[in-house]
Figure 1 (tube, rainbow, N blue to C red):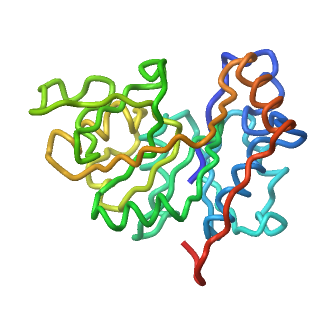
Figure 2: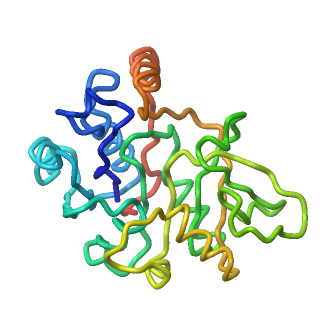
Figure 3: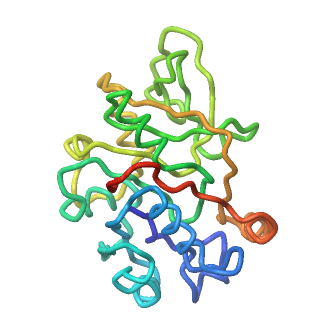
Amino acid sequence: MIFAAGRGTRLAPLTDRVPKPLLPVGGRPLIEHILEFLVAGGIREVVINLHHLGHLIEQHLGDGRRFGVRIHYSWEETILDTGGGLKHAQPLLADEPFVVINGDSLLELALEELVAYHRARGAVATIAVRPDPEAARYGLIELDEADRVRRISGLPAEIPVGRLRGFMFPGLHVLEPEVFSWMEPGLAYGVMKVTYPRLLAAGLPVAGMVTRARWVNIDTPEALASADAMLRETPFHYPRMSRGGNT
């Protein structure tokens, strides 16, 4: 699932007429880079949530065939944030594990590695995390020595036993359908701020996969310009799946 419903207010006035995922980065809309990343990882069916100028995203991507995927759209009458939007899209995601990626960021990672790591850990969710001196700005993800996520943005507030290491969240994770039982329908809330702390407080296994892969986002005009320059100079490379079958 790609989160693409937001207004992108920090990018206004650019996003007054163009939805954030359609802003050009490295010569084409960022969402095309995201689809390329997913296809390289074996994904063939994609759900995209829509609200602000969503019709432009739907018009541009269509059914997804020319990008090598089948796209399903999850329209939101009001913006439901990441958690509410995910729960709203549950009927389209079926009863199987799924990848979730933010529509305003991109990680130069072999998606297959993240999915394999998730399966090996037997986690209910696995979050890609990166070391960053400004990690708290993106929502601090704290891992224990076994790379199990213990706190996200300080939640749950109880301090776990042992030393924790802080990382940033680059907008990519793998979830099991079990998480839907911890999410209310019809409400607006963030999956990182509400759903994950519930999973952690309940003691469910949430894994963190540490990576130093290059990452870009476009949440501000400065970040957009930096991402555009980076992908023009050295485009991201997404390794293809090494085995048959699809993720």
